[in-house]
Length: 393
Ligand SMILES: *Cc1c(COP(=O)(O)O)cnc(C)c1O
Image 1 (cartoon, rainbow, N blue to C red):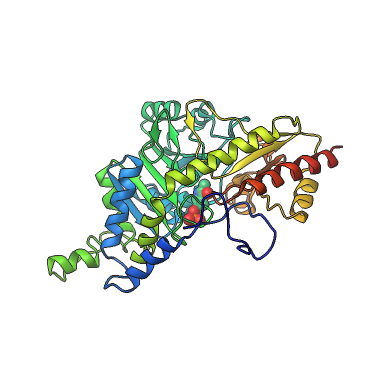
Image 2 (image 1 turned 60 degrees about the vertical axis):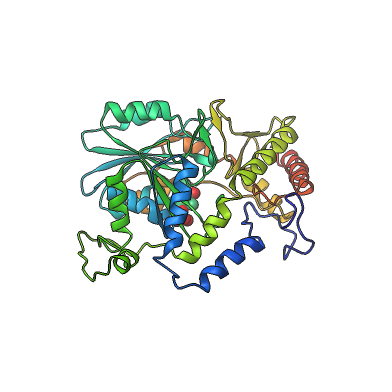
């Protein structure tokens, strides 16, 4: 196994330090090959094993594996029986999938603004968006930091709403000592290569609610009540389609990879947090580049390391110059309510979420992934410091 703090020479095709990158070792490859040599490529035993392990790691009763984080969000909205006329409150500072899942099932996302220092959903603004049609709140643990779940749960309980955590950034994070995955009624994860662990494509939903879990299992399998493996074991051909579902299954090949990756999660989160503290220290002298705030009750999982540039710095120029110097910076995100689809569909646009809109103009994400070596982190810090000085107006 490669040493945690070094990478093989010639590992990368070019000199570009990407903003995120997966880490696949020989033991991951062996785990996948073992399944390829077995009888079950899909709907086999690795799925239950991955689900049970994931539920244990996140401190929940049920985990349901699906084909992507987007599929996980879709299944969650289905399980909640959200449909035409129903509203779901979604923060605007997120990836579009957080809101699209509501539209898939015929519901309406209602965009809400975020807090200026963390870019996490603002609970006071959530409460102001609640109407008689509101059914659920989707919180997003942006960059890997959990939202204010004490406030969000209180609001959800007061208004009898279901709380869904889009935790795609936050696997391995904690809020007041409780693991992400156990903080909301339904919690959603992605295993895209940019996320904490990968299965190529993949996703998971965790919940303590057995009814939700059952509905999501049915939804990922065409709306059919039992899967192939269960029928094989019970020796029966009988099945019924109870609702309209999809094929959103994760394969045993992918689940074996997920199980192997999950073993490394604590070590990788630790490394992400080390990298964040090196960035924090390295940028602490600069008034022009500020990391987002971290609340003391949070154990940040650092999917992203997001910084905010001072107002007098041209973000576009910083971005271009850093890319030119092989620092693979990125911008997370264009506020979802600003996308043409939502402007046309829901009439959203500038002014709806002013904090997110203004933050979007100034944020930039620095490279963050566990295989980043110390030399690279210091190269990022010095290049960013130089470029920012150059781009001051
Ligand atoms: C990655 C991500 C998703 C979608 O996950 P996929 O596995 O790519 O479908 C959803 N929400 C957020 C916040 C994400 O970062």
